[in-house]
Length: 335
Image (cartoon, rainbow, N blue to C red; front, side, top):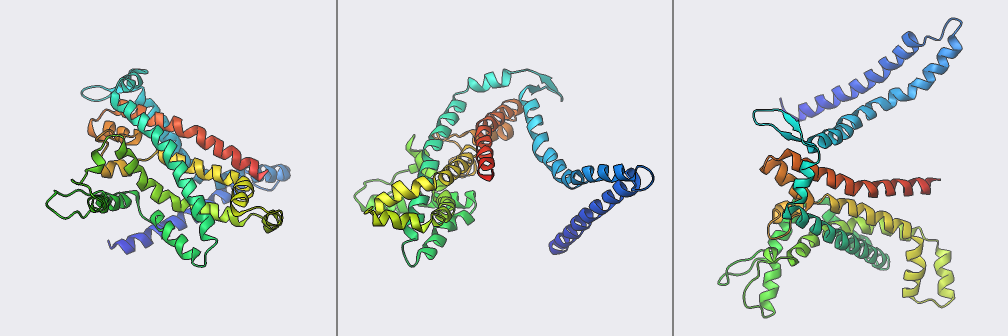
């Protein structure tokens, strides 16, 4: 079957299925379950109206249960069990977590994730805020914003390939096609460096990729927030003799503080789940391991589903408080 025809068929079946579900479920509710006739007609109508919203919510709740709740529960179960030779599982309690805590690679991943959490959200938010402020003051600001936002359209793997070429290393006798080594040699370096194999610093070279991608996201959100600041406030500050730096740091930044925190936490969640960049560029070698890549190694390379699931639960536990905090802030703003 031609892929285009497959797509059209999927759309047709999906749309008709949704329409059929809502129509038939409402008919069943009104005609069979709570028919609006007889002495209990009024009570049946009220009951039907109480149940009707749940008919619309049911597909979404079922999808969330199948694709979100079930994987979480199953991952938790796997993290507390171990595979038995010949098939099946046995209950081992917290043994997988204890084994994971004894592995140096796990603590290397935790240490690197904490380093990513310190650097990437701060740099991405700061650069995004700086670009948002500067591009609003120039004529070709929209063009600049489009260019800076462009990396957001590139997948993490695609961005990793681009930056791997930037860090590329060739033998001394050959021309350096990697931009960083070409500049290094041009400014007096003797031998080209294998940047991604230098412990500690290689993590920062990987972080540059995510900062490059996320700066565009931060810029768009913060630019909209800056435009929302009342002009009267800025004009009043100018009349009082405030200079541009005072206006920016004492008036604009405090008024968009909530937006800055939302951008910061959103990027933080992305950092906690970072996998593609590390996998594509170093595969966790040379002390660049992160939690998501450690989980992948355990699950699909060593087939250690217990420890792999335990590391997945650690990632979820790290992300959950930030998600809860974001939801609470969103509710406060809506009130």
